[in-house]
Amino acid sequence: MLKGLGGIGDMAKMMKAAQEMQGKMAELQEEMARTVVIGEAGGGLVKARSTCKGEITGLDIDPSILVASEKEVVEDLIIAAIKDAQNKGQARNMVEMQKMTQALGLPADFKLPI
Image (tube, rainbow, N blue to C red; front, side, top):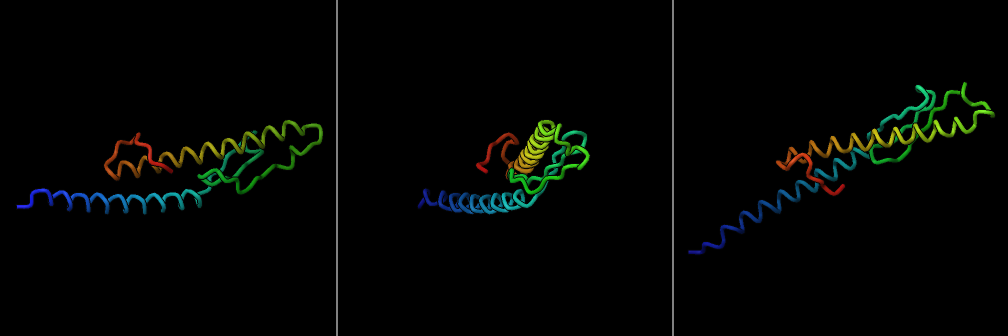
C-alpha cells in the first residue's frame, strides 16, 4: 500500500553509516595527533619529531655540528629534518585514510575531509 516508505529504512541505514564514519574519522584524527614520526637530516645528525598532524614535538641535534662557523648548515639541517618529519606524517596520514576509505567500501583515492 505505502510503496514510498521503503526508502525511509534505507535513509536510516545511510544516516547510521554516516554517523559511524564520522566517529571513525574522529578516532583516526585523534590517533594521528598522537602518532609521532621522526624526520632526519645530515645522516641523522639532526632529528625532528612530529605528529602525523604536523605538530613538531621535539628536536635532537648532535652536538658535534654545533660550531659557530657552521650556523647556516645547522639551520638548513633543522629545516630539512622538520620537513622530513612532516612529510612522513602526511604520508602516514594518507595511508591510514586510504585504509579507512577502503574499509568503508569507497575507492582508495576517495578524499575524506580530514
